[in-house]
Structures are given as structure tokens and as C-alpha cells.
Length: 114
Image (tube, rainbow, N blue to C red; front, side):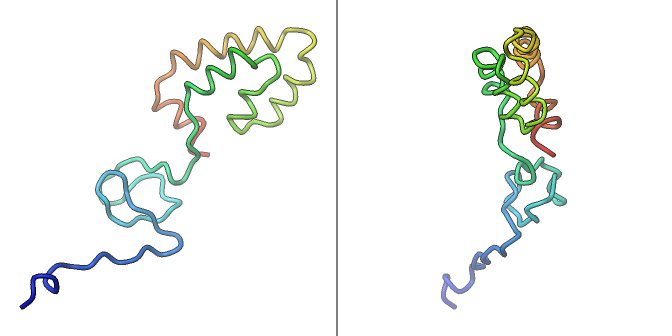
């Protein structure tokens, strides 16, 4: 028996399947966690980071850019509409501090698994 034939060949992934980051098994691309190992899957959400959100809130928060980044276009438009009052800039500074102290898991649950 040839040693190449004895090894299992990897199966091609279907259109809706991805590899789990934890165990490497096939999971559906909308799964929030792997049914085999329980690892969180980022395939179902977006790949936003709290650090980018914090930087955007600090430098461009008065215009609501961080809210557009987080997928909250309505809130971003409200910031943009009232940017001349400097109230959105004050709120954005508070959100900047919030993004710095929130944990990665809490940020992911709130903004990446929508």
C-alpha cells in the first residue's frame, strides 16, 4: 500500500463552510461558535477592533466617524448633524475612554456579532 493513499485527503469546503480557528473542523459560516470545540467564530460578524474605534472616536468622533465604523449609521448621522455644537465631540471623548477600558470580549459581543 502506498503511503500517499493511506492519508486522508482534505475535502474542499462548500460555499457556506469555513474552518474553525480552534480545532480546524468545518463549520457553517454563520455559526457564532464551533459545535465541536466551542471556540468563538468571527466568521459570523465583522472584524472591527476596539483600538480602531477608540482612535476614530478621539480624532474624528465629533463627526461620528467611529459610529459609522461600528455600523451605526443613524447615530453617526446624528453626530454629523450636530457637530457644530461640539456636544458630539464631548460624547465621543467619553466613548474614547469607554473603548479603552472595555474588554475585547465585551466589544466583540456588542459590535462584531450582529
